Image (tube, rainbow, N blue to C red; front, top):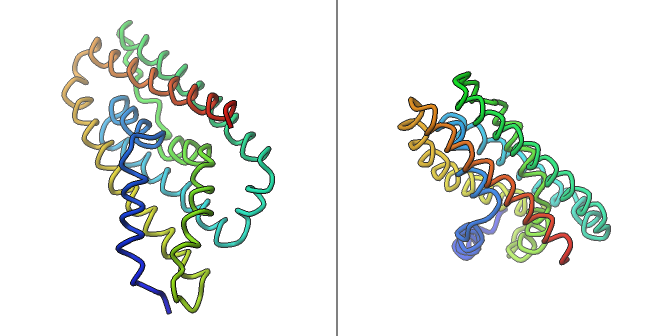
Length: 207
């Protein structure tokens, strides 16, 4: 049996964690501006998939390995920062193509992008390691309880950040007829990717 009595306090903790702007929120804003609403939906499903992987890893006990070997998390951060810089380059190239009238703006693979960005944020697994065990309560099956809590967290982020991405996608839909406006949106997305890569690098150096 699951202990559902912990859900109100758990949901409150998740909302406090999701409310401040973070990498996933900033990424969803960038995706909406660059690719539009449908791209945002695909990207948030990718993010949810990455989060589900980390939640499953914690439930399976693999999270303790990552916590005891910080170098693994550093490697993930480095790969994530490099991938975000590559996205920035691709987005800038698309913006230049728009200005030149070639219009090849949609770089695609939004689901894969979202999943990689999520997996490159190892703070997720650390969050699960710190928070999920605190809300086991009187559950008879701790692993099932943590799996359910992880699923709730994933669902909340998919809904909240998905809405943010879709809302930012309205700007893309309204301005997509103008090559200059489309290029500006892509440049904004490019800046977001660079800032995210920089924040990951700085955080790793200060850790």
